[in-house]
Length: 137
Image (cartoon, rainbow, N blue to C red; front, side, top):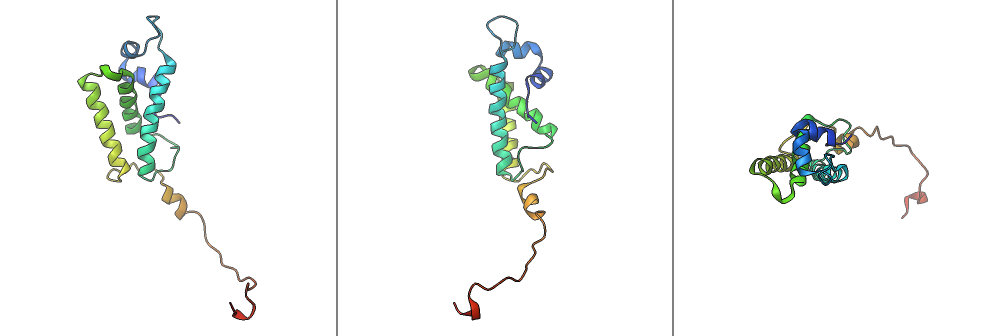
């Protein structure tokens, strides 16, 4: 399940803003490959922090806070060097939050890699034949 989509960006920030930062040469159409790259970049940043925090990837369900911060990161990437102060602040907030997730200060309540290891099942010991008969090494 993706963290960020074109539709999510349009819903969150409005079609006009997304067109301002990702329009196909004055056609009135959103440059979907450009937006998809920004969404992938955002997903990479998010995955890095989630992995550092010990979360099992890919996420089965994306928490709303991750989706929101993912949109902020993708939007910042689309603005490139024209980002406004507000866009930059929202990006910085997203990165700060992801760092807290990565270092374990913030818990998302999602399955972790450790959960999988702990619930891997019971260990069963069975006697077998000896490799060294008579107990001599």
